[in-house]
Length: 121
Image (cartoon, rainbow, N blue to C red):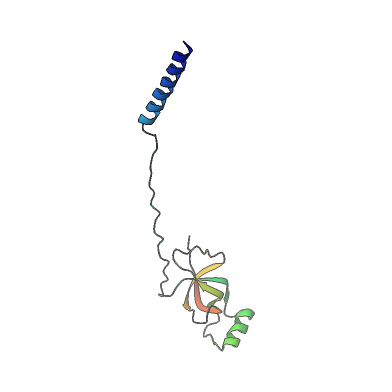
């Protein structure tokens, strides 16, 4: 009698195992597409910059930098970016300072002249 109970338990376990294998798993596959970042464009055709500071050309710090670089501004009310680096599309870099588009950023990131604030959110 004990042998038949053991055999019955084994057969029951095999039956449960077979049913478990036969039932398809309830998994759901979802796909999400990550949107391609839109390139940040400046109206002037220049590349967006992230400047640590943006000040008027009449400020003392800007005047000192302009003198050292031998640059003369025609309009001292021009916005000048200080310590600027390019903002690239899709980069993981985030501009926590002043994102701007500038008319002249040919000073190796030291300054950029004619800057206008932009929104990069």
